[in-house]
Image (cartoon, rainbow, N blue to C red; front, side, top):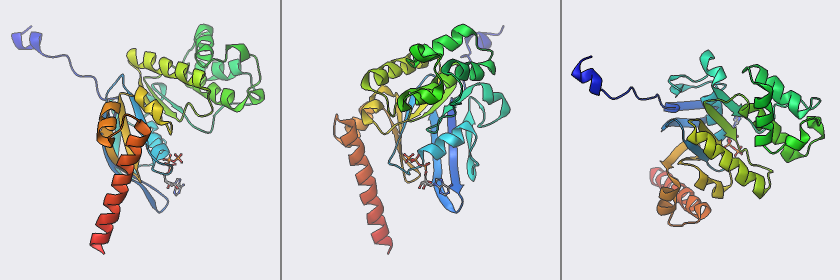
Length: 259
Ligand SMILES: Nc1ncnc2c1ncn2[C@@H]1O[C@H](COP(=O)(O)OP(=O)(O)OP(=O)(O)O)[C@@H](O)[C@H]1O
């Protein structure tokens, strides 16, 4: 082995997500306007933005179920949506993809089967979302919050390398919410990357990187501490509003100047 080779740095792992000049149009509406960002492996990236800012569209592009108009999205070094990624990427949408007439356990087993999950894996995923007491219950007979947790268990059982979650804590009580964030942190520490959208600003503090989206533009990618500093408040909701309002003012001023 040559001296150079012995001291060469190990090859860097590819970014978990890398978007370059990402444009998406839905019908005639341009929804994403050229996004550039990177999420490193083992991070929890929070996707924040007002309703209609393009969060779901961006997540769909990352998962590879959204046609891209221009630019590219790379996931774990491969084009988003490519076949080898199917095993490595989990996606939990707001509209749960759960079979109401099957039990919780049967649902999780069904998803797990595609990933050779064992009975222990299934039980562990169900326990992770706090549904161990409901494993035999028909999903249709669960409460709304319990039902949405079944789809999360279905994603967890696959042990994906990238987990994309659209508002996973909606409808959950504060105890479960805190437990889930602990779970996400443990997964990230073990190398899983999470992309999580949220409306709940206090949840932003659990993320290592925040993507602030407004009207299909990436306003900033920053840490929670940087958000607090840039928005002039330790209260992340207030800081977020300050940044969003400043962007709105900037847009109005440039429109006024142009007219
Ligand atoms: N099929 C469609 N055709 C045209 N426009 C669409 C379509 N689906 C969504 N949009 C528009 O695209 C924009 C972004 O939608 P998206 O669902 O990505 O936003 P979001 O940030 O996830 O919103 P929310 O927080 O309310 O879920 C919105 O203005 C929406 O009205």
